[in-house]
Length: 154
Image (cartoon, helix red, strand yellow):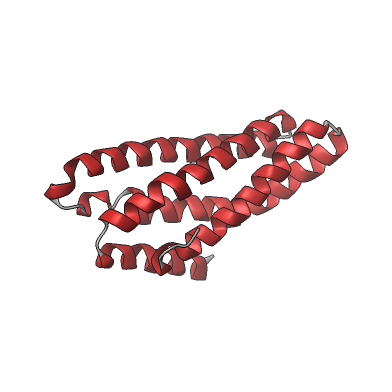
């Protein structure tokens, strides 16, 4: 999917999350406990530096900027706010799955993969097109800059 430049860093990470989600689903479905444990450990090692940062970027630069929509777009603003609220709840659920995997409960791998896949698709197919259509250039630039700044720090 072609994205405006300001959303491209996050969109590239979404591609990585779709790969991760599919591998999580496949690994869980195969049922090999050793492979499941190894893959969960890979997730535990990369989650804080990859996905927690990604979620924080989205929350700080997107989920909280929707108020910048003009009054002419009140119905769209309500839709975007509702979508962002749902996506933020999904971030917390994925954080909870991470904590479970971190503590050795690998039974959540399939659920983690399924949620991550659905979540990523919602952002790419629903949220990002709305942002491209209704946010002004200055707000999109703030999203882009936040994304770059957070990645430089971590």
